[in-house]
Length: 207
Ligand code: 5GP
Image (cartoon, rainbow, N blue to C red; front, side):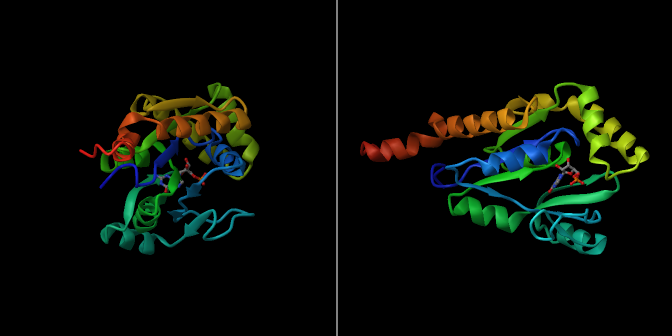
């Protein structure tokens, strides 16, 4: 398959509490883009304000394990006692249709995606500081101190995985971070490896 016809798979990842979700939303609020968000599946409880099918597909542990067995997930990971995963069919459908698909997932899942789809663009969202990360988790107010501590410990391990990524974007300010991600996506489109087929076609020199 020609790379230029297939959409771009963009993986936004990084430690929990870094503000990935907020950055992703700001990215989608930007004008003139063709980005599609891949809604994940999870076994965690729905939070106030969340919508099933929009924020996540909320499913039972049994349903999730069935999807794993059937090979229906591009990646999955257990995160602080719950499963999270990316439905494979939908991602493939959208990529085939030429859409740019954005995943917002934790670090272990991102590693699996890179292995299965090495052509993806991996972006690590980093906090300006560790204290900033703790403050964000605390401010969200949706989890107990015990869960926050678990998430902080996990984040400390995840920081060390940044080298696996193509880009590191510091979330100093949400709109700045979203701007940088958009700049990365645009630059990725212009990469020779992604555009050479189209260009050769244009000048009548197909390989
Ligand atoms: P939360 O419970 O705060 O919504 O998400 C917890 C963590 O799971 C976040 O780091 C979030 O990015 C990650 N996550 C969300 N969806 C997926 C997914 O489909 N796969 C993986 N591996 N992680 C996910």
